[in-house]
Image (cartoon, rainbow, N blue to C red; front, side, top):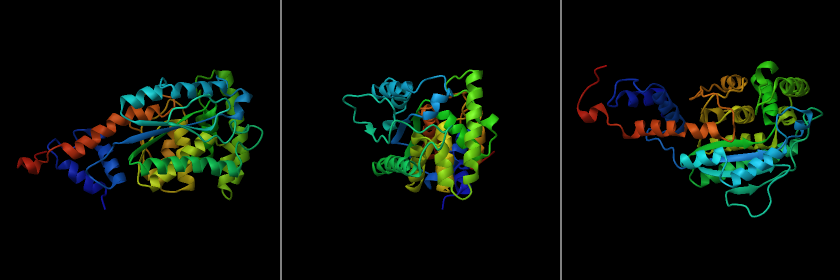
Length: 339
């Protein structure tokens, strides 16, 4: 059993002043406990982006129309999205899964694309449940299948990202429902909403959470399905299956963390495999991270999604792994610790 004390003793025996690399050492400890090894492995790694649309956009909760989801899916397929560029820069395999895009691209598709569409987006959560239980289970299974496939393929670090206009409304509902955040704390600007749009979003979230909350204690699937999205539930299934298979999960921003809340609620212990890459500029993200007991590596005011915050944090994992694996020990140098 490799515990925190074991890893700390290894770090303290390396040829450097004790604690001199600060949070990189903390990250090394976290990785070693997750992986149960001191010779850390952070490659190969894979990011899976799940895309879906949301009926609630019709209520005016977003600065962008649903069509933008399909346009961005096409941009990812063409290798020109921010996630595409960052995955290539940091040697991370990238996949894209359509779980419910209303206007998906047509024509020949690259090999990294999977069409697993469950329909043209969720129902409008402002008028009723966003997903049925059957839709929830189907989306979860898609994400779990992606995680199992990645682990079977030898990928050791997994990232889940999302693309879906309106999904910060769903994330705000889930953060209020599962992390206990107030609606005011959970609702933010998303992809650039103005104050009037945020006011609509806050009202929609308040009403949706009020309907879902009474179900949570005895019917958690139904409560969560009422305010979730196809791509969010797929990420939750991805996290739960990835953790069960022994993968290291690098967590992205607000929407991915809402999915992590679902995974931890329905598959307790999943969060133990997670490392939080960053804290988003979305105000509710701090509450969801706190509920999971996770401390973010970065605080760069990012809020894009697409797995981009996690991709940007990959060099920190590389650094922690190199420290743990490749630095000489004081014993090798024939000296004792002086500090």
